[in-house]
Image 1: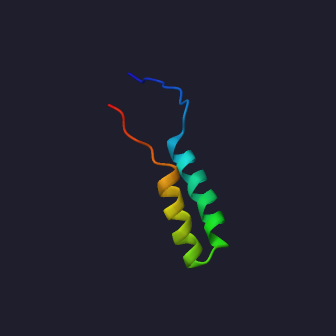
Image 2: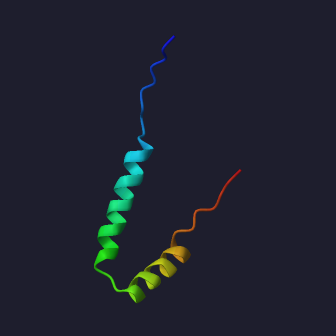
Length: 51
């Protein structure tokens, strides 16, 4: 018995797109800029779990 499931979200494709986007952004930064970028992102974009 085969079950066909239609994907509405491709998680692997999404992960690869995000990785490529971040790599492109970070490639033009110095080490210090990258550290600062992640420090800033950590305080801005914290997703809190909800249960």
